[in-house]
Amino acid sequence: MLLWVGLGNPEPSQARHRHNIGFMALDAIARRHGFSPWRSRYKGLVAEGSIAGVKVLALKPQTYMNGSGDSVQPAAGFHKIAPGDIWAFHDELDLAPGKVRVKRGGGAAGHNGLRDMQRALGTPDFWRVRLGIGHPGHKDRVTGHVLGNFAKVDTWLEPLLDAVADVAPLLAAGKPEEAMTRIALLTQETR
Image (cartoon, rainbow, N blue to C red):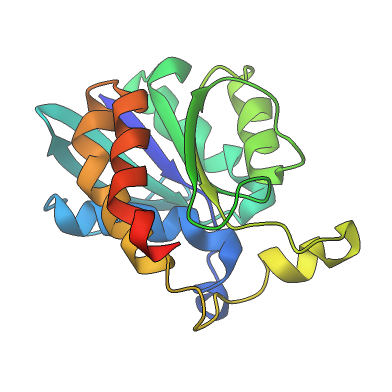
């Protein structure tokens, strides 16, 4: 079983924030692949499904970004899911809007959701699906950028979410390089 975690904040008023692109990605995957309805569990919302023959538990922590690990750890512990089978879908300032990079392990790079997952799991050795939202240009503008809504000019967002849902079978099969290539091909006209 894989645990796919979308990082975001639970307030309805924050649903379209750039910081919530992880939630948006999981919603797109769950819709496309016929997951169960979302229900409350592990201080989050969970939905279950199967992708490419692999059972996937999707989790959207409702603990706010800075407490994401308080939801991830109990879900992983209950289902006996090793850190190497956990995938975090999250916003990434250091990638251009619409770009995606997948990697295993590494630092938190200032991302409080990743930092808290590392704290709760006791290791950074989990997968990251880094969803580019771009940098606002100056560090003083970062908070307003990530906590701001996507704009109408962000026409790349929906095609990106569709592409992530499309490549979910490649991610489930442990083929991140193929997934990144496919996303780039699917979204090249929208950037």
